[in-house]
Length: 140
Image (cartoon, rainbow, N blue to C red; front, top):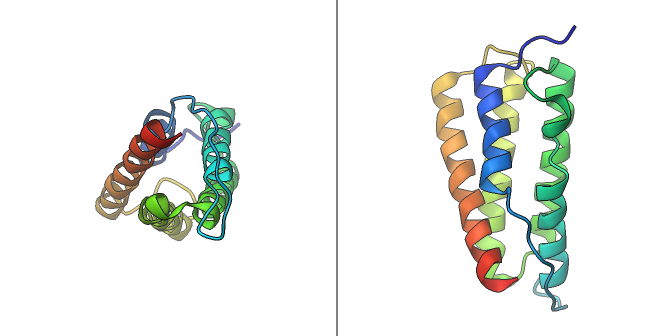
């Protein structure tokens, strides 16, 4: 039976759903300076296929790790194709996901997370998520 999801980890799962939860339409432009259409498509995929939804309120450490691996991969994909006007927000988002993953990895993806550091990282994550959402609402 899976262990209850740690409160800190549950908070990030909720944050992922809320901060990037709106459906976003695709948009387009190709070029060496990012790819607007791919950027919008990848963010839409993240919002529609959230890696934390699968386990709900409880998860094993392995499930949390798998979800963060998926989130990290999607954040890297966003960063790779970010158009110039979204590059800073995409990079900040990736940095925030990396930091959250590092903190959880240090705790074995279990409940012994450094709560203060996690809250700070979570705040950075929410801020980066909201910047991406504002950009996409205006540009896609």
